[in-house]
Image 1 (cartoon, helix red, strand yellow):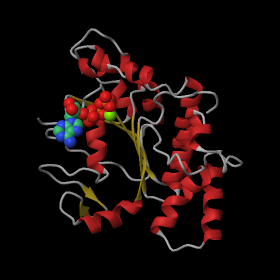
Image 2 (cartoon, helix red, strand yellow):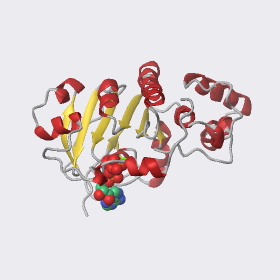
Image 3 (cartoon, rainbow, N blue to C red):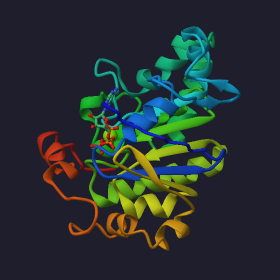
Image 4 (cartoon, rainbow, N blue to C red):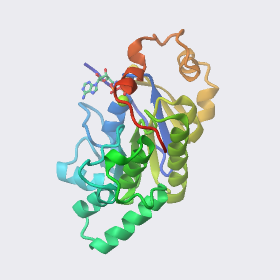
Length: 254
Ligand SMILES: Nc1ncnc2c1ncn2[C@@H]1O[C@H](COP(=O)(O)OP(=O)(O)OP(=O)(O)O)[C@@H](O)[C@H]1O
Ligand SMILES: [Mg+2]
């Protein structure tokens, strides 16, 4: 089965690129390919002058130090507290002393608004706090690029707004490159410098949020307006609501 076909995209540096599209359109697959987690069967993925599809595992490992990942369900290590979770990549990948690592962790927690929550365990965090802790962990190594898969899924609108604003402000502040996969069309268009819209494994539009909003392609308009009628067939598998129902995230505080 072909998951992605004929995809050719460029991710602008020091800007926020938002990848949107219906369920099963290939967003996560695209994110995994451009972050080097998966390799394509054919084609190239260029990052910093290297083709991720061809380099050795060791080279890939080194390049991936420049990337941070925020996975859909935060993927914090349950047996470690917040501070230890964020320190983890620094202990693993650097020779920094404990006190330097402590300072870096404090800085990162400050950036995501989690100062004072160092000692909490992941199970004690709300959904929004867990996302922010995962964000802090992704920032620990000062990455050039941070990839987010559905950073706001399972959050109430206010917590989701906090996370999207945080992505936008930290992208500007740290001059990093952000790549965000989201179902949230409104939030996606509001934080994006560049939008990539996918449908059935293909990129059907790429450009500024305004060019996407102004497009006269019926598929794009249907997606933006969230209508069930139109060229994109609607089915229950086109929504994530079952997933969210089955895996409820606490949303006490963002
Ligand atoms: N490694 C793989 N090899 C082949 N097919 C795959 C692979 N990974 C995913 N697929 C298929 O590719 C399609 C796109 O999946 P993907 O997870 O990228 O969609 P998505 O846009 O992220 O959907 P969702 O919004 O539900 O998360 C699906 O039909 C899936 O079964
Ligand atoms: Mg996905």
